[in-house]
Length: 109
Image 1 (cartoon, rainbow, N blue to C red):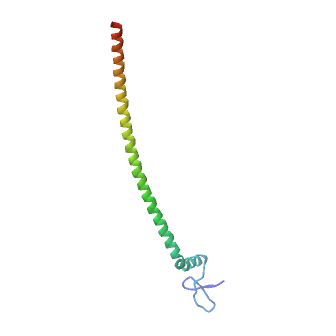
Image 2 (tube, rainbow, N blue to C red):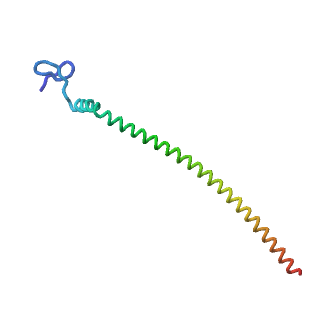
Image 3 (cartoon, helix red, strand yellow):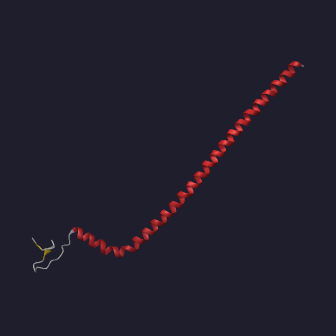
């Protein structure tokens, strides 16, 4: 079993303090050494993702605007439909009144 030095690191038989390459340190060491090599692809990926987020935000804004326009159009068409139904009812009432007057004239003659 290795001796532990003052820094909590195992000591070599010669008495030199050398940090042990524990699993955590090995991972950290690997990440640090790989980070320089991987920084370009990582930055490229971050840029790509950032651009994609910007595209999605633009699409979202476009869809919101389209949705707003469609809702406005729907409301306008509903109002137009209500107006046409009202006019149709008025015309029907007038036609029925004219038919009633014609029948009255027919029976009176």
